[in-house]
Amino acid sequence: MKRKNKLNHGKQETGEKGVLKTLLFFFLAAFLFLLWGSWLLPVTDPVESNYALTAKEMVLSGNWMSPQIYGTFWYDKPIMVYWLLSISYTILGFTSLASRMPAILSGALSVTLLIWYMQRIRKDNVTAVWSGVMLALSLEFWVISHAVITDSILLLFTIPTMLSGYIGVMEGNRKHLVLAYAAAGFACLTKGPVGLVLPGALLLLWCLTMKSGKMAARLFPWQGILAFFAVTLPWYGGMYLIHGNDFVEQFLGLHNILRATSSEHPEDNHWYYYLVLLPAALLPWTFTSFYEMVRGWKEKTPFYRFLMVWCWGTLLFYTLMATKYVTYTYIAVVPAIIFAALAAPAIRQGEKKPYLWTALGFALFLAAAIGGSIYIKEGSWWVLYAVIFYAFWSLVLRYKKSSGRRLTVITAVTASVFLCLMMEGLPHYLPRRSAIDLAPEMKAAPGEHYFFRSYPAGYTFYSGETAIRVVPPVSGEIEERNPLWNEKYVMPSLSDKEFMDSHRHPDKPVFLFVSKSDANHFDHWFFKYRFKPVKPLLTGTIYILTSEENIPESFKEAKKQIKEDIKESHETDDSDDSDDSAESDE
Image (cartoon, rainbow, N blue to C red; front, side, top):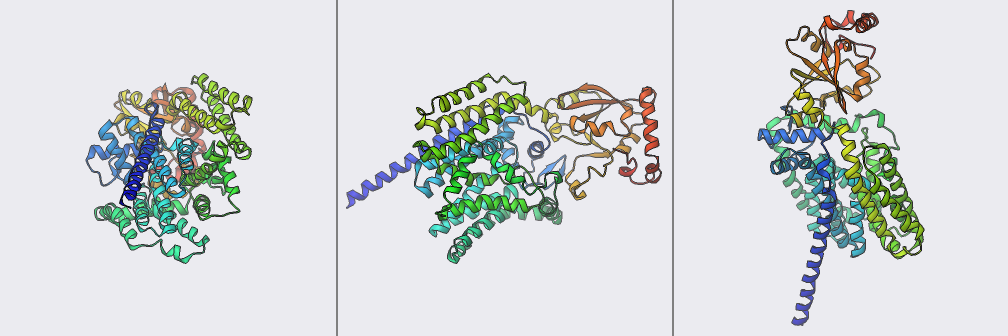
């Protein structure tokens, strides 16, 4: 008996070592895959640069508790993303690669965690490995695992929140429930209350679909609740002690409640927004996932119900929110990818139906890649086209002979396409959305520096200089959203009238940058006649302020006409609020 126990113990240790080796292999493979070429990607505006600059100021100020930007405390997101970026900057310096390292690590760890959880739940190594591979090679995951935003970190903590929650409820495993609550705490340090509210609602809804009050009761162990507060209270409590109601009103009121009740991006507020986004996010595994969702409908196993609630409940939750944003439903990718992985064994065995659905998604993915190569003309795309030709030759011309390795070919080609996009596509495209080229040009211009209408935080990140934003009057056509959203902007700003009044007779050159996206507004701006272009750039144009004496005759005529057009509004506003003093016909 003792000898038998020793043998079983030895087999268990060998099995555990094998699992660890597998997990380590896939972590390193995912990390290197996501890392490759990331040093070529500059920090972009307007989203990534806000996180990067805030973390940079955290490092430079030595204040690792209170996020600040332009020297002003702000509470757009909790602390986790800034801590991870600050650690990366401390080790690697203020570089583009350092900015992307937290997302890359989060992506690699997410792949590894998903493989472990799937092996733990399904006891199926093939499905477990393919769930990680398919996650790493899904479009939205690949994009967000390179992005300087919070969502890659949120996904990392949501995976254990949901899957440990599932294990804890199904098996009555209190350790996993405590782990789920702790992970939800870290999610709340990453994204706010939604890190607990949404997973909690999804798990409770799943228990209701199982019609089991006992399972629902397991969701609330006191040890788990204690673990959650142990994770969250040090920072949230500390911020309240330091900043008081200002933190509560800004963080909860402006950045959470307002986001849910008033759309920040009214133009995207469509009920079908996420129904369009999810299929694109899952490429090339879109139809593989949907096929397995339909196939499993008859059995409706507990795990099937859990995945369906997780995926479609997330979409429903964010559809009901006022603000729509591309990455909000990102966590729904995980259950959808798990569905796709459940079809992997059948595809590998040569079953026709799941393969054809997979091939359809793969074809759409390749078409999107070709479209990207046409849109980004600067890249050298011959490797991409060679890879796509190989896919056609292997999967179409050799259809019957490739039966057992079709999924492997699709996987290899998908990875190759992503690497081509990384090396030839994004390095040419992202500078159009970055201040990396603007920063040295603008900073080198001798004089004062201003930005028209929009202010790229990337300029301050790359140049170390904080310039001033010039704010023109806002037309009724533009101001569709709640004006409370304007409280988000904490960069130094002046109204256009204040700017012009303070520069009637400048004693040094005054430079104004106008981005391409703001060019139309600039063309209709009342004070445009005072500026002359001096440097066209990839993202916009640098102008210089001219004196009244040097204004061309054509501008003088335009000025006269504009004055006549807005005379009535000036008569009522000149003596009061500077923002309303030049209500132009913009």
